[in-house]
Image (cartoon, rainbow, N blue to C red; front, side, top):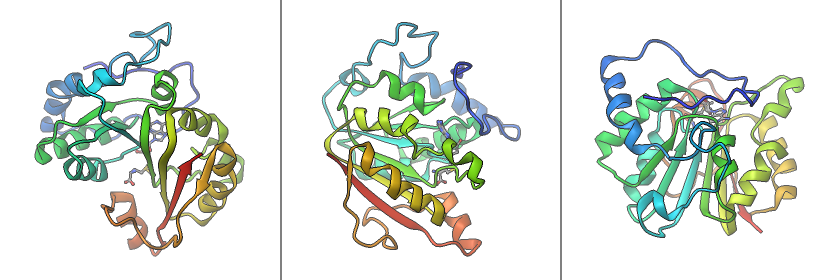
Length: 231
Ligand SMILES: C[S@@+](CC[C@H](N)C(=O)[O-])C[C@H]1O[C@@H](n2cnc3c(N)ncnc32)[C@H](O)[C@@H]1O
C-alpha cells in the first residue's frame, strides 16, 4: 500500500494517528489500491497531466467530491443513496481512510474512488469543470487568527476547487465554528460562487451527520449548513 507523499506542500494537520486495527490494515492492503484515483501523486504523474474523469468509472456519470471525509460516514451514505453518481473522497489522515474503507465495504458500493492524500494534489490534476458537486464537511477550524490562512476557505483551495466545478455545480459547507461561517461567507463568493442556502440551521434533506457533527453537538456547538452554486 503506497500513501502519496506531498513534501512540496505545507500541510499542518495529522497524517497518522493511533495504530491501525488488523482489519483496517487488511482493508488498506486489499481495497485501497483498487479504489485509489490513479495519476494524482507526483511519482505517478510528474508532468501533472489532467486526469481523464471518464476513466474513473468507465462512463460519463456526474462526479461529486468530498474533501476531508474523516471516517467516511457521509461519503458511504451518499454513495449508497446515489448509485448513478461517482464519488471521489479525499482524506489525508490514514486512520480515517481505513475507517472509511470499512464503511464502503459494509455499504456494498462500487461508485467511490479515493485519494488518500492532500486534496490540493488531486485538484491540481482535475480537468476544468469536471465536478458536479463538492462537500466540505466540518473542515479543520484552525481557531487561532494567525492560522486562518490555513483554512480550506482561502484562495489556495477555493481557486482550484472553483476551476474543477462545472457552472451550476453545488458546493456545500458544514461547520460548527461561527468564525468559519464568517470566513466562508467572505471568501467563497469572490472565488466564483453565489450563496443559495436560505436557512443555515437546517440540514440538507439528504444529510447524514458526521462524527464531527456528533462531537460538536455533544459539546454544545450548533451546526451551520451553507450552500453555494458555481457561477
Ligand atoms: C475536522 S475533520 C472532519 C472530518 C469529517 N468531514 C467529519 O465531519 O467528521 C477534517 C478532516 O479534513 C482532513 N483534511 C484536512 N486538510 C486536508 C487536505 N489538505 N487534504 C485532505 N484532507 C484534509 C483532516 O485529515 C480531517 O480528517
